[in-house]
Amino acid sequence: MGGPSAEREVSLSSGRECANALRVAGYEVIEVELGAERGGDLVARLAGLRCDVVFNALHGRFGEDGCVQGILEWLDLPYTHSGVLASALAMDKTRAKDALRVAGLPVVESVIACADEVRARHVLPPPYVVKPNDEGSSVGVYIVHDGANQPPQLADTMPARVMVETYAPGRELTTAVMGDRALGVTEIVTEGWYDYAAKYSVGGSRHVIPADIPAEITAACLDYAVRAHEALGCRGLSRTDFRWDEARGLGGLIILEVNTQPGMTPTSLAPEQAAHAGIDFPALMRWMVEDALCRT
Image 1 (cartoon, rainbow, N blue to C red):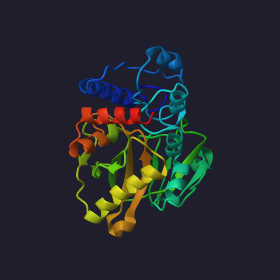
Image 2 (cartoon, rainbow, N blue to C red):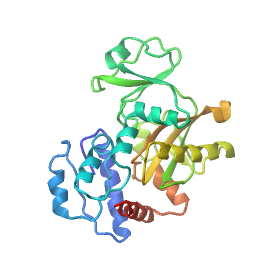
Image 3 (tube, one colour):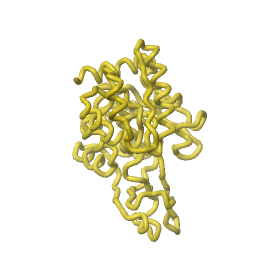
Image 4 (cartoon, rainbow, N blue to C red):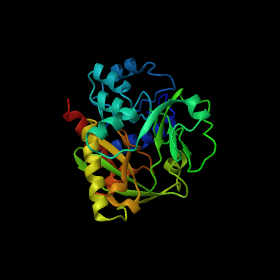
């Protein structure tokens, strides 16, 4: 847990929650906190532990993009969540969209552009969204509303090349997939938009499970989430996020992204859906560990 990404604090919170639940489930747990450097002495530390399985509670770059997965493969250590290719593919929003589009799943149009160009002019007609191509948790997201006269003034911390995508209006929905099973549909209700603070602050958002939506949309979310999980080659636990424009019916349901390592904090969505399906947090942790061991 921890690591060098912009989601370090989320990872630390996820790691603590997972470690506690794993102990409740009966496992001996050693917490390995990574510093802000990329990798550091991780290989030596893991080699010295002689552990049976690694529970990966890292988020963002290095932990979720295939890098640490490659290290664990090289060490021949079983680990939770998706493998190298699926992790790298899902983290690259553009390539993930390409894979989902080939699978016949609905995504919005997007382009990759230089950040300076995005600051200088509207790369797409408003409304549109600007975000890093390979970060999660709504880190560095700008929404340019319809009728905006000026392009967004991106922070200097934004990468040199960014994704610009057509804005998808509507309600926020999400579905977690556990193995080959979709757990349910949650609607996320916020005062504004579902940004980093809304995701991880207590009271930042309200989760309605099951979502109060038509049966047709519920069925589509469950189906699309499993198909997205399979299209990207995910394993273990994933979560697919949607926007639904109810005025357009089924045609208004759009996949925003697939998370190969959903958050495991007290406000996180995947554990809530598992609990609603009758799987408490320690049982979910046990399933994830056993799933990792079964793949060796």
